[in-house]
Length: 192
Image: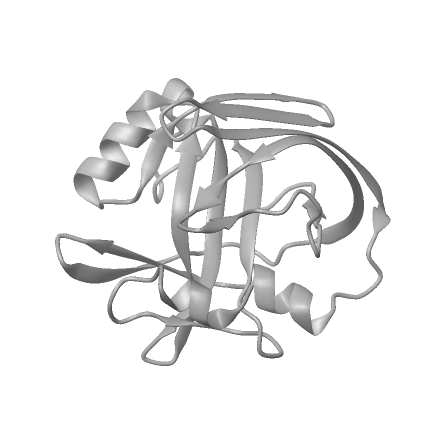
């Protein structure tokens, strides 16, 4: 996407990060299992959920990170907790995941996702763009007129090539729609 279009959608204090002159928007769909906070044990209903993020790539004071345009989850408790305590833009959606299929509907925003996927082998070597898109360890959000940074701790994404067939995709961000033919696709079996 042109960087100026992304800049228009960012809160004060964030700069659109670019790769070879272009800003990127990613849709990341995943399932979380047994998530815990520090050394606490997982709580069955709260620790397992599905999520879809629509994100872009930003910098603030020289620190690279991500900024979420939308975060959907299938658990209402996650929506209530994260919106109340840290102001992230979580929305409750109907999300279904089966092996090789991801489907979501958010009636409030008319967001829809319906795709099938099949990993087609492990990538031999990550490109510079692969690292740029996946190895971000800060999440920025703007809440009550204040910019916050949340540090994210995860191991490196082990990416593989993936074949994706998109049946339905509807995400509108201001005047931009996410394209049904993405420029880049990744698959990660598991991340800790």
